[in-house]
Image (cartoon, rainbow, N blue to C red; front, side, top):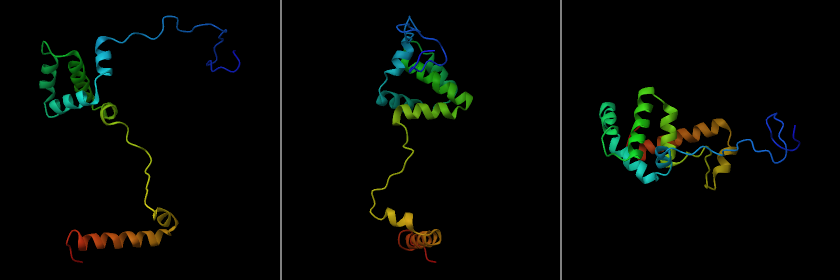
Length: 141
């Protein structure tokens, strides 16, 4: 076992290449899809958003349609048919980017909320809701 290298339990000699052919080449469709800009992908999804699946499948089979569009439509059809929520998430992340997991506040009073006891925090929240109801929504208590 090689020392100091992550080898996954395989014996690797110095200079040995594990994948001599290199990374496999992308198909034309994969290349086109990977290089579609966000705006192109968003424009396509906006165009097909309200179409029934049958129409989408017909559109994907239309002669002369760009291969990137046809492949994207086929991916959308597959996601819809399988009910693949993760697929939708990946497609939307491709357009809009990943939603940040962390919430940051630049408010100077944030530390006060963190230090406030739970009961006081609940009471402050209820007061804020009452204020919004009375002043913003125009409701009376």
